[in-house]
Each structure stands twice: as C-alpha cells, then as structure tokens.
Length: 371
Image (cartoon, rainbow, N blue to C red; front, side, top):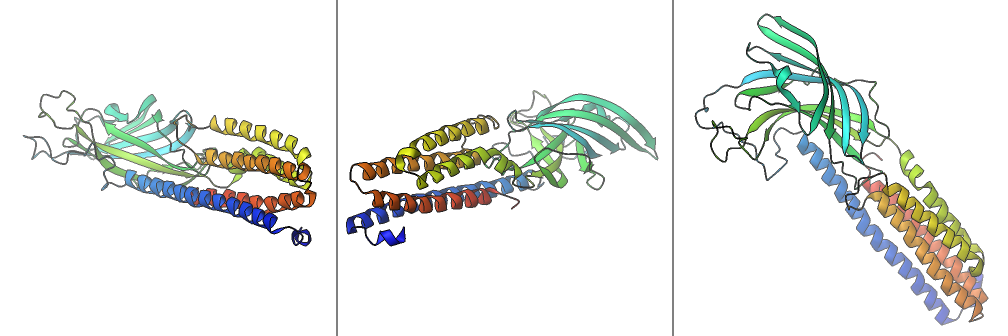
C-alpha cells in the first residue's frame, strides 16, 4: 500500500488525507461526546444511590419531609421500635417490568404493650404477597416478633448504562398506623443481612446497608387532627442492596453478532468493491436484528441506553463502509484507477477499524462502575 502511495497524484493524496481526517474527526467527536455522557450518567447514579441510603439527604425537592410535629404534639415522645431484615431470596428481578421480589425475614423489638408493629407495617412502593408470623416473645418488659414475608416492589431501574449498569435495590418499610411523631423506627443494622444463597442473575451483591429516613406524603390523608397543608410523615426503615455487573460476559454476549457483522464488513475491504456489497448488506441486516433483540430486554422508556449507542456505532460504521464502497467502485470502474481504489480501501480499513475498536472500548469503560 505505502509503496503504491508514492505513485498517486497530489489530488488523490489530498482526497485520501481529507477522507481519513473526516473519519477520525467524526469518530473523535462521537467518542468525546458519548464518553462524557456515560461518565456523567455513572456519577449521577452514584450520587443518587448515596442519597437514597443517607439519612441526612432529602431525595426529592418537591416533598420535603416534615421535621416538626403538628400543633398540639410538640412535646410528644415517639415510641421506639427496632427493625431488622434478613433477605433470604430474591426470586425475581426484571428491569423490563420495573419490579423485583424479595423473600425475607423481618423482626421488631419494642416495649409498649399497645403497639403491634408486625401487623401494621407496609412495603413502600410494593405489595406484600404473603406475611406469616413465625415467633413472638415478651421477656423483661420487651416485645419481639419475627415474620416471614414475600413482597414485590416496583422500581424504575436506570437503564441508561445497560448492559454495564449497576443498581440499588431498596426494601422500604414503614408503619401504616402511626406517624413519625408517634412511632420511630431504629435500624438493627448489626443483625440485618443478606443470605449467601441470594443470587441475582447477571449481578453481584457488593454492599448492603440499613438506614432510617422520614418519608412524607403531600397530603394529610384526611386526618382531622392535622392542620391543612401538613404532610403526613412516617419513619421509614430502608435496607439497601447494591448490585453491579461482575464481568463483561453479558456485554460480549449481547454484541457478539454485531461485532461479527462488523468484522465481515471490514474483511470486505480486502476484496473488490463489487464483491463487497453483498457482505455489507448482510452485515447491515444482522446489525438491525441485534438492535431489535437488545431493545426488547430493557423498558420502553424512550431513553437511549448504552446498548443503543453500541448498536448505533455499529450501524454507522456499516453506513460508512457502504458509502466508501460506492466511491471505491466508482473509482475502480469509471476512472480506471484500480490502484487508487485499492489504497482507498486499505486506508479506510485501518482508519475505521481503529476508531471502531477505540469507541467500543472507551465508551463502555466510561459507563462501568466495576472495570
């Protein structure tokens, strides 16, 4: 290639230089933009997860929790109830269906004889599918109750970095009868845990934590004892489970067909342009099919995921190959410049392959919590 390059005219050399610069410029701009976007998405996810499990951070600016009891209850002392959980199974988790299911033990320790926290707790943003009391004790003036619960929770998973995504599952418990100025949860973080048998396909559990946070509703719920505009606020126990992709297995499994299609298109540069059209068209349909399959895995939220970006880069690469093939065929047949056509193919192969490999390494890495 380089030996024949010296025989080219100045016009041909300028054309090749401009062509390569255009490929590198477009690839560089795409890389700069998309790497920055995925890095921002990663940082936003980390901040959101930290805020969710931090008792001092308010997650929603629209519903600030009430910190002051309503009039007439300023001197009330809330009753303390210690809460802990043990996650025994996570039988189902679906990013597409925006839900996950937990099979867990939950226990309560308290002293007031009029309280029955095991009968009045709820799972926030979810539904309790089954609740069974396993044990109840009263010793030395203290009550203890243990329950086995299966609950399904609604969660809007952040799929922007799928399949290099990580998530925070939160099991949120609050009392349905007494507000925070009447009842106060205390987290039994020391005894709360996740069973070693718990497995979430595609993810590793790398951290857990428990926290107590106030949770307000933008209504009094019609309680006549509360003033108008007061937000009913409850003490909420949150148990967080951090999930992350342990390796690149799913990523390569999802895009193996796409990468094979791109490779076949690239091999076409070592054949004549007329023979290359069939390879490029076949690769295009393979890339479209891969895009359709990966899109069916995540929720239809209208957002562009990392999977969409990787598929889009592949389709764009095939489009460039198709356009280059048309030009190369034109030079080969109409201009009778067979040598120039061959050099044009070789230069495009090295420039495009370099950019494609760099983008497919750098962009997923920018989106990855675990590298």
